[in-house]
Length: 220
Image 1 (spheres, helix red, strand yellow):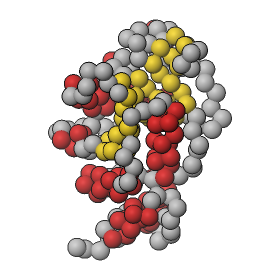
Image 2: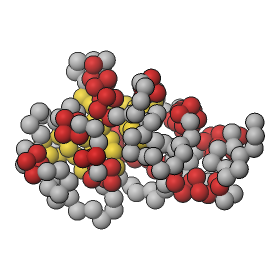
Image 3: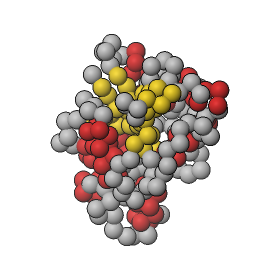
Image 4: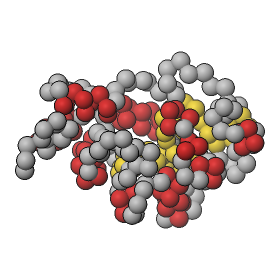
């Protein structure tokens, strides 16, 4: 059993997220990808974030009809900040014994992983799949994490990944790059511009019907 855990703010989810998840599922032959919206992202304090409820509903709409995609509200069940290490521990403790976990994240997030809670322990708990940007040249882990830890990860040609001392592997993978961002979607909504073909139609309709991301939303 192989599950991919795809965490993020998803404010809102868009076609880039979905395409990425679909390709990773195929590349690693995963049984499913679980989208996990953060309830209180610890590293995003610079702006208001749409309520967890709305972000979760948009994810459910976006993945509807795909039996290989699911979502989890585990980070909303816990109080306080949403830390990835707590989420991964939850799945390890409440899942089949033969489960292989693959934590999916973007290149920018991985390069800033030292700011994450217990990041060094985090890397030992499960496999990591790092989605690289176009033109990125993979040179290993040096410069991303300290050398005393990066030296413990050895490149395995057979898996095209960096195997760690606990048996878990860090993979760098390229996927079709859709230059879509949640930030741009929010900005377009505020300016009254179309977001068609950036996120599923069902999500577009949800944003409009609930007046999300508008500069001056109507009083309900």
